[in-house]
Amino acid sequence: MSGHSKWSTIKRKKGANDAQRAKIFTKIAREIIVAVKAGGPDPDNNSSLKDAIAKARSNNMPNDNINRTIKKAAGDTDGDNYESITYEGYGPAGVAVIVNALTDNRNRTAADVRHAFDKNGGNMGQNGCVSFMFDQKGIIIIENDDFDEEEVTMDALEAGADDVEIDEECIEVTAEPGGMGAVRDALAEKYTISSAQVSMVPQTMTQLTDEAQINAMTKLLDMLEDNDDVQDVYHNWDMPDEE
Image (tube, rainbow, N blue to C red; front, side, top):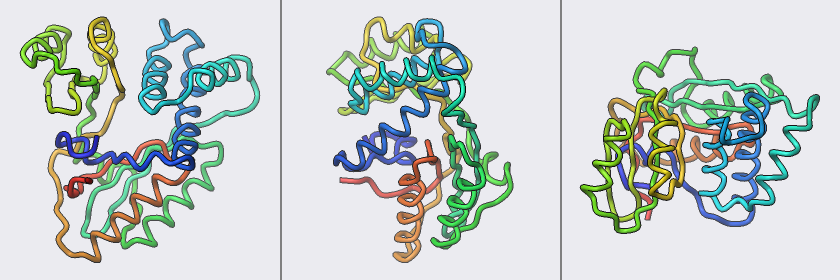
C-alpha cells in the first residue's frame, strides 16, 4: 500500500516471499502475546488484541496460527515476556527515525538498533530527540471496495474520526489515539478493516536527493525492519513511491 497517502510512505510493505512472511508472522505473534498477557484472550474485551488480530489477518496470517498464539499466551505464565522499548535517532541528512521494539533482551536489541544507525550514516539519540516532530494518531485502514466516497467519509466522521483519505487501493481514517477503538468498532460493522493501530505521523517530511544518502537510508530501514525485535519503524523521509 506504499504511496497511497502521505503517512503510508513511512511504513513500507516488502515483498511477500516465504522468508518475509515468516518474519512478519513472528512480529505479529509477539504483539498478540503481549496483548493477551495485558488484557486477556477475548478480543471483544481486549482492544489491543482485536487490533493485533486485524493486523494479522491483513497480513494473511492463518487463523490457526492466530488462535494457537492466543492459546499459548493465555496459558503461558513464565515464558515469552516481552517489553516494549522505543528508540529514536537520525538517519542520513538528519532524517528523523523512531523505532518501536518488543524484546526479551533489551541489551541485544539496543546494540542491534545502534549498529543499524551507525552502519548507515546515522546515529541513535536520546529519547525525545525526534519524537516531538511526530504526532501520535490512530490510523484505520479500510479495504476500498468501490464504496461511495461521501458515504464512507460521513460514516467515519460520525464515528468520531478526524480525517479521511481515499484512493483506489484503500481508505485511510485518522482518529485520536484514545478514540481509535470506538471508531474502528463502528466502521467494522459496515466495512472490512485491514488494520488499526496507533502510529507516529511526521509533521513535516525530509527529502533526500543525494544517491548515496538515499541508498544509506534504504539500507537503514531494511536493517531495522529485518530485525525480529523491531515492530514498527517511523520516519519523516519523503521517500519515492515504490512500484
